[in-house]
Length: 270
Length: 86
Image (cartoon, rainbow over all chains, first blue to last red):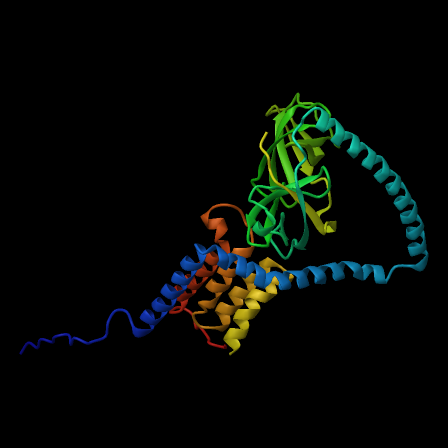
């Protein structure tokens, strides 16, 4: 006799209880993220809340950098002290010269009715690499201080290191000129020829120019706003004869790891 | 409790010592805890302060990384033994 068996139906669903539990959790998280993403004060709150941690990390790395000094020789310190004293004296004289030139420049600008230099806001750097991604800085000024996205970030009077990339209520993130993909248009300080520079990441800036372009190691790249700013210094020039181009590798004009204060100036497009 | 502490650590440690520490810590969290959905929140919080560039993917880099990590580990949960240490 032939037997036939029927498969018994069970109540077990394809998706178990745990699946729905996990799905609920993920939906709640997705909802939270979407809500907070479009709520600007939440970003400001997060940046404010994490600010003390950034500061402590910055202090930690600054202290770490001072450890080799603890083991340095006494004679070396005396020698360094003497050298630094003479450097201070030179710098003091330079400042006197600079102040008189600045005054003269301001007077000439007024006479020629050139646009005023504009307001500059100083800011403290509260985090740099490795605390934040390479080629970015976290500073303690924000929209409350009149800072906007795209404003120029200076390391000195005429040294442009980057632009404001993200701005919160009283914190902001700076993307340095060397930030990967950042494109700036400037000119050579020596020849005044225009050049396009592109951030290559890791503190490097690159450019590709025709082989007959006049550029040498040490040349300075100037970006123009209402003033001229030095944005990069040429470090390597490589000629690619077969392609008919020169590959230029540049660096920022200052050592970012030694900077603790920056100046922010509103960007004015000429 | 350990899970909460680890969640706080995954935010605090990268902020103090370096953003890249989030990646090994997230991997460790996935290894130690079952369905560690907290790393998505931590990734999102860190994405709010770090700047990786403009655009959706680079703007939410750590959030997307965390999400992919969890999805991958969920798919692998049947294949490998997933211990629940914390």
